[in-house]
Length: 186
Image (cartoon, rainbow, N blue to C red; front, side, top):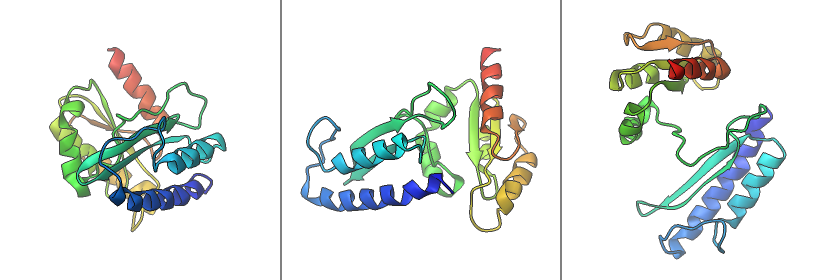
């Protein structure tokens, strides 16, 4: 898989840089000054330039504080002008429900929410129970365990008891985004 090849080096660099943080202050760093994150900037920018990844957000915490937060590249490899932003919500799955609760106000202020999920596909139902707007569920083919390339998530989402959930096909992020755009204009 082309896109996953760049993920491991980025994670290794983050672990290396993270271990150096014990000797640094907890003041936020940016790419503009000399910081232990120069390697992260270089690797992320190179991965985006080679189209190994469309983009990403790197967030490093130390002693309960954010010490580095930066967005790189675009949200998609497809021709797009939508840059990655640091406020994009990632990885708030059901297994870490506290991360979902930390973003509750942002989710509740949306007019429509797109939720991508793998495994059993429970996240859209949980989000739908929190918000009073349409939730577009996108089952992901990427996962582990008995995900059956997204079929388990698709079936779980189709069986949602939340009336404000609609489901698109496996990995159909484009369809979900288009539908969200239409709903947002109503």
